[in-house]
Length: 345
DNA sequence: GACATTTGACCCAA
DNA sequence: TTGGGTCAAATGTC
Image (spheres, rainbow, N blue to C red):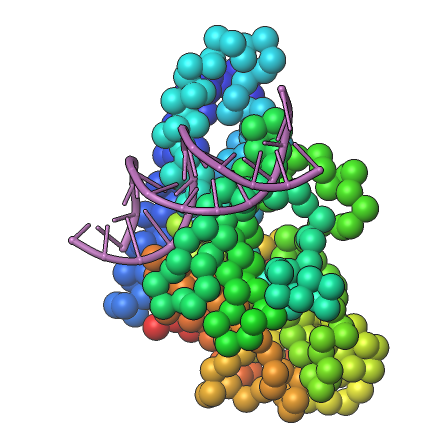
């Protein structure tokens, strides 16, 4: 990236991003006019080209990475030698990009039950060091929302933040909205493992002792970037597996159930284990029109906070019930990337 | 003194 | 104009 100036680099990323957004808008618009397959295919290819270009630039493209990933923070802020020269520019850049950075931040939501130790004090430690920087009463909520940012924001330029809100219904449940990935090193020094981002999180245990009477419980995660809520969001659902006494990704659980001869509901196959949030499968587990497989998903808790914040609110893309081929490759990019549009609106 | 929390003010997108 | 998110000075804690 040395041959490309900071401004040129950012301008290039901006231009590509804008082009991508406009193309997506066009595609959305086209969908209201029943486009031909060829037209849609062409738009898919255009979007794919934009995405590849952003990836080549090391920006992360649709991976939903923030502008502060280790790779890009180096690129944006320049080398050590040029640091001083670029300081003023970077200050302005930081200021101007702050809003955009927040919008583009990778976001996911967790519902966490406070354990018996903490009681009503708050959710358990998630392994990261957070500094509270604000608290606010939100309209319609009984309890204030607390805002935390990474303690090492200034030292390591880590822009991860989280919002903690106590549930109105259950005092022991906290909705935690994580925004941005940690780029600090604290993950390597803490004994408690940090919360993995959804695309990496395969297993999540939350205080099993508090799940009495809830043999099948679920933790729902969702991730999105606000500017690209439909294409680049997904929900991964973790269900409590009573036979193994642990949480498993729904996909894993249903795989298991399928092997046991149980019915599989394809809507619930999550791409969470595909290793990338590039692929979208917004599974609306609460939709009454969707037939779920028995009790596996009956008690699923959904946390759609991030998607409701998106500019395209209420855009729930359902995967219609289909006869699932057990060998179908759900991790096929072509399937997940744009399939949601075919079921939207 | 260093660091964390509190809280009113401010900013900005819708 | 409003509400959510952030800032930053004041205050608290170790």
